[in-house]
Image 1 (cartoon, one colour):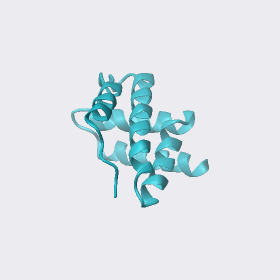
Image 2 (cartoon, rainbow, N blue to C red; image 1 turned 120 degrees about the vertical axis):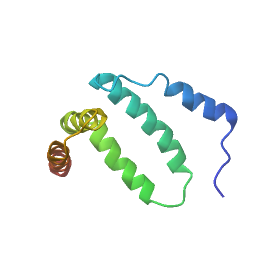
Image 3 (cartoon, rainbow, N blue to C red; image 1 turned 30 degrees about the vertical axis):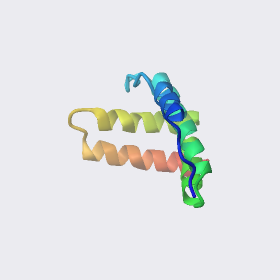
Image 4 (cartoon, rainbow, N blue to C red; image 1 turned 90 degrees about the vertical axis):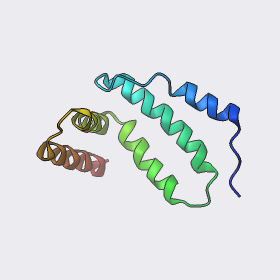
Length: 103
């Protein structure tokens, strides 16, 4: 049975994630996402499935790696724009996938 999460734990997590980053600031965005991953790591440690653990390994590899981070951040910026270009987004996803596979 999964553990119950206390109100104090939830508040601690929320405080870690405040304030939201300026998505155009690559360092602030990366720091924020790494904090988010710390929280998700805690949650995944309590699950019986290994799929979430495997997904977190990939997420850490993408976010905590200089080569893949730049490509992932470019994708984030493309997605938060008012009108992201499908062609640009597709190219960014392919570049990110190639960089991640090269690791």
